[in-house]
Image (tube, rainbow, N blue to C red):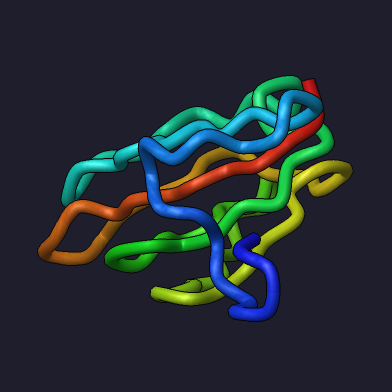
Length: 95
């Protein structure tokens, strides 16, 4: 996060060496199979659009722009975009 602003750094900006920034786009109507290893130790911000977290039991919870997520340890099946615009997720984690 930028010091004092409470916002994630813009994509393309360098983070201090112990961290890495990753952007994931989920197109409208698409779903991304959940692989916990990809999200381990990451704070995830919904930068654009909306994303639904689909649990293995079938229930879903929707999150929108500005929401901050921690996906580790959750029983998730997929990250789904049922909106009309692409969803952009930005994840910051330790290397």
